[in-house]
Amino acid sequence: MRVTIFLATVCLVGCPKTDAPRLANDRALRIRVAQDEARRKDGVADLVALAQGSDPHARELALRGLARIGGPLAMLAKAPASLAIATALDELPAPDQQQFAPCAATNATCGIELGRLGRRKVKLTGATRAALVAATASSDAAIRYAAVYALQREHEPPSDEAVDAALVARVGDASAETRAAAVAALGKRKAGSDAIERALGDRDWRVAVEAVRALADDRVVPALVARAQQLASGADAQVIVEGLRVLIGKPLARASLDQIQKLRVNNDVPALTRGWIACLALVVAPPPDVVDAIARCPLPDHLRLPLLGELVTAKLGDASTRRAAVRMLLAHADARVQAAGLGALVATWTEGDLQTIVAALAAKSPIIAGAAIDAAAAIYELPKVDTAALDAAVVSRATSETELELLASLYELIGKRKLAAGAAACRAGLAGHPVRAKAAAECLHALGQDVPPPPIGPGQPPPLDVATVIGKQLRWHLVTTRGDIVIELRPDAAPWAVAAIVQLTYRGFYDGIEFHRVVPNFVVQGGDPTMSGWGGPGFLLPAEPSPDGFEAGGVGIADAGRDSGGSQWFIMHSRAAHLDRRYTWIGRVVSGQSAADSLLIGDKVVRATIDTL
Image (cartoon, rainbow, N blue to C red; front, side):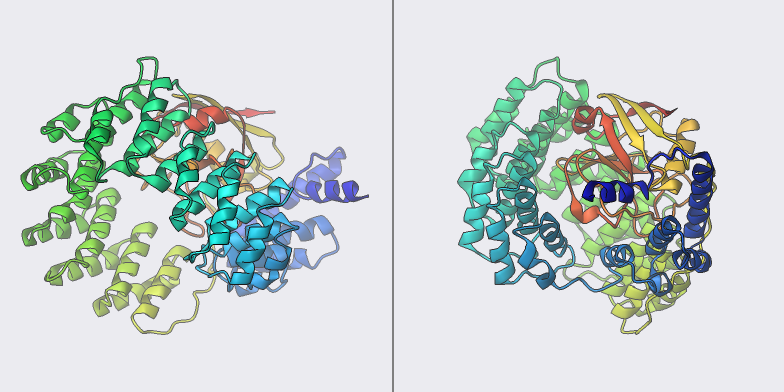
């Protein structure tokens, strides 16, 4: 009986039907609900009517739609899905940890929920921590992982010998994801260094990545050398690349620097991997002519030259060398390289550089403007800087800006710096897009003006036809520079996002685009035509958050807040339950996860196609 109920529940979200009239009705219903979701406030009444009807399938879809829209009207039904998504999107207070602590040792879901509290900056009580420690010794692998995950994500963890001992024990767990989470948790607590050092040689690259991050000192170097000597073409390169990144600017012993300068991999390793290792080694152990050396190292300009910015930020080399590096970056034609120069400028700051930042704040390129906003935030922290011109530039950009992520950053800066002249710009944002409205409300609150939470406004469906994907079985075939990846797309879970992927693929939009973001043991992200993180397709997608799916091989849509997704997407290296209910999940990798794990920044989608099954 339990199996029957489970299958019936699964079929509510997309099992194939054998009855043709029912299939047609289901497809029409899904199209109707998708359109209602995209219309946001204007679609709520129809969804409420469906949610109050007699058809259980229609009720299920309507309640999910209301949860995705959010806001007070959408949560009237108080369905668990609505409340869970609203909580994940910070529209409701964080749940009381006492709901979950008693069941952490018997139910993996309870441990995961406690882990999600970390993002909300909720401190765990001693009793909760003790319950999680007990759960780490469970015979159930899922419960052990959930408990370790919760301890890894804990906000401001205190010193606790029992926790440390429990985590050290889990560094030897049978599950690689549990081992990796345990190493990350120990690193956060600055405990268990011997266990972390042993994890440097772990057979799973994800565990070793967390170990190099946790240690970030001379102990990492022999492990990197050993992996380099055995390196083939797989994901082990992530350990070396990440290990070198975390060592930049660290006070390493002369023997370690010598080993890094001699670091080599064989010629059978892909050229991009060899390039990253060679160039990063120059920054970790810089030669006297480091600027010239990096200018010649084997990576494209937009990948290697920003490494000069990391060298400058780490204050490596003499002052004249660092200033020369910044000038080189700022003079480059590629906006991505200029952006790196703006970020590095603060590390070589002189009062005369303020005009450079002010001019960049007015740049047309969102890449440059975004870097200028970040640089401005850092400049505000410097002592004795006359920021009047900078204040005016920030407010001016906020008054005219339309790009959502830039606006959110500008509003945040106005609020943090108490720039009263920016209040009008923030108030104008209250009636805008949800990302803009939320940031505007937070800005005004920081300025001492109480404003009610921005309501959910009407929506505009993107220029896509969801009817072309709903009811279809689709696979997205990506030929990448690391091999083929096949992704099962799920229009039943996210019709708008899948429709966008399909339409853009048919246009050849993704062909030739680089993966611009890789966070080892987390995600690889691509789909930005500017290959910077700031680009998109020219339209925005309604958020379609899913209750789960963000595990290894899960595929989602990147965004800057509710309803701001576009063409950018990501593949998970490992489970990340804190993404559940917050991001749009579109499917999963069914073939080629090893290729996905091997992707580095600068790898490309050579060709993307859609297969209809």
